[in-house]
Image (cartoon, rainbow, N blue to C red; front, side, top):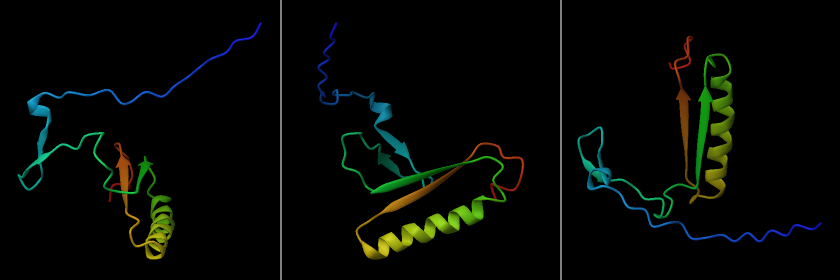
Length: 96
C-alpha cells in the first residue's frame, strides 16, 4: 500500500477587522494604526526571553545576548533587533 500526499502552500486569507481593532492608543496618548500581518517587518529579529524566578541567571544571559546582538549590528548596521523579557509573577527580584 502506498500513500501519496500533495501539499501546497496557499496565500494568507484576507483578514477583516472591526473599526475599533484598527487603532490603539500609545502610552503617550497618541492614536496609532495596528500593524497588519501583511505589513513588512520593522525589525529583523525579536528575542523573547521567558523568565520566572531568574534573578540569578538573567543578568549574565542578557549580557551575553546583548553583546552578541550589538556585535552583529556593528558588522551589519542595517540589522535591527528587540529583546522582550517576559516575567509572569516571579517571586524573586527578576522584575527589577
